[in-house]
Figure (cartoon, rainbow, N blue to C red):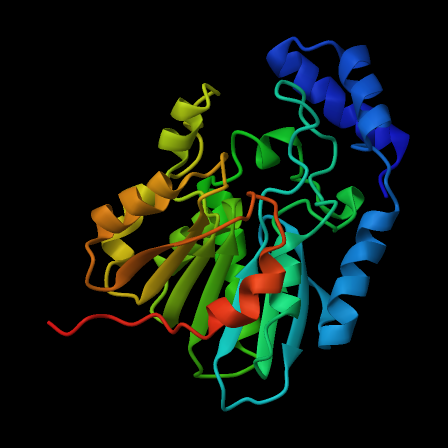
Length: 293
């Protein structure tokens, strides 16, 4: 999917910033599939096709984003899914050369949604060829993955998709790191009907601290925007078997927003990257609502 020169270019930039061995990263990338893995796009297409989701590319000011979209009724809202962080790292210390997910859980959730209007947005630098994304570089799927310019690009793409059903509301769904983007995008908009998150990174500072990894000062933290989305009906799903984003993360976020419109719901038996899509049709039946004042 990416040429070797592109891989070397990106690695050289990372090496200059972090003093990580170029040979070590390149070797790990080849072994673990971070540089060239041609079937990740085919896997996504195979997930999307049975659900009628058509692949599109959306050009924003910062990035060319890959989307899968099905809009069959312009008088209905759009359920819009945002992908997780994907293959951001090949080890605890070595970043990937291509963040495209091997198994796109966010897309699997979208494909399990029977609504008339369903859309999916990949994150910057996922699926889209790197030579079409001059801004893409390792920081955008590591330390800057929730940066203001990333959020602006995703918000722009949401607007392009919303234009396919003019005047209709949007139900946002974010998986893992896509949950952070969902909150940050919702905080900028007035057309969000509801928010659902799945294994969502709703407080990156807290998560990074408990896992003893570096802070992300160039990224926005969704919990800092809790008050801006407090009036939007929302459910944050987490699992008792998720040891990456523990249930405490969603509980902290609900505490920050206040409980009138936000709920945390713990399901059983699913790992962070487990088969959430198999449970999704049942979980979707629960409609987020705000309690009466």
